[in-house]
Image (cartoon, rainbow, N blue to C red; front, side, top):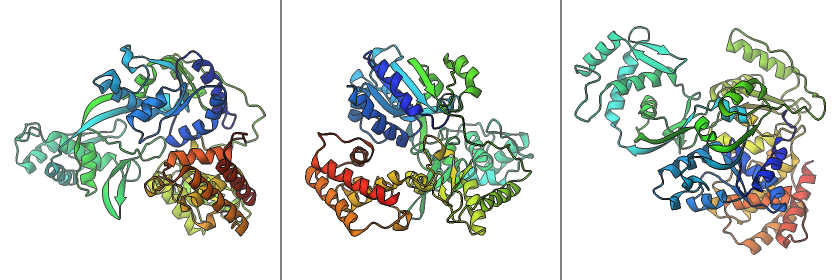
Length: 522
């Protein structure tokens, strides 16, 4: 189905039908935000029809996961499902598992599975391994020496770089010079610490030649200090929280950046998405771009692709691609195009620029700034990722220029004129947090509140009073012990669901306040 034709809504039909068999239906999304959004909105349909709905989010406890997986319909990301599958196979007893069929011994996951953005998950990331590892001490001195040695080696003389296969191969001179520098007979000789020098040197050269800052990884900071290396997902542009390269490569990159070398990972369980999703007894998927992968989907998973025509003729104009010899020429042409359509002007067109890496997105922002065009930047850096919904909510307003990696291209809607509903929700959430309806620890998990100039207009005193009154009513009814997820669910009930005769007073007040704010922002 084409973009915007209603895949999320249509998915409720097969999920409901298959859940009636008594086996769970899994809806697989590409990130926590989409899983939560779909559960909050589409879950209302399933609950109305008498089904239970579960949501899996990172940071949940084992008991919370077990309870969510026991529901009729489960919303979960591909990575969370994969790691739960691995943890279940490391469990020592069925009581330590969370997936409903993990204790059956068949290896197959009983139930129906529909994968959102199926081409991305089932084809693009099919061979991506999910790994569970344990930490063992890393010899930091060896990594530091190997980094110094790698800096002294020259490509074409000491080693060859295979960029396609992400590998480097030392030649005879490379081995000989390394052995002479280290004062050893062979790089493969096992030393007193039980390891040879060869993997340390190879990883140091890989880190030098094949891994670039802000493209394959980013340096994580805390209070201005460098504290680690975060892997950037090449498909989504997101920082993969908690993921690490194995076999000492992560430590080699830390040494390259001058960061204290962390403990080393030793793999104890591994599975690819291809192997994982073939475990389901019934597998399906939905995406807007599956026809180009139709043969692979049928050959690997036995899934036939059926195109669904659009409800109305496509109004979008698709222009031919334009190729440039250099990146600089492409950037200059891009800036001219944005200036020509009025990007950055109060009455100009809204512009969304897609990039393939963090580095490229920042280069384009700098090029636009030189021409006096202010931009919103949405890329893999954690500070920007937390503001995803507020940046997207404003991206459709006249003259706004948004530069993003393709992290924002999956499942998020850019509404022309801006999205008053999302902006109203952000404002209501900010007021509720100020009112103290949620503890400090839970509030720290929420995205930061944007400055007042982010919103289309200032709220009058009457609207502010109604908002604060709703906050006081919630605090009285529910106390101050809500989690961040519970606050999100409360906001969804107040802003996205229809009224019910059974709604308590604090929900009615919050819904009325949110509606007033939304009307003010239209």
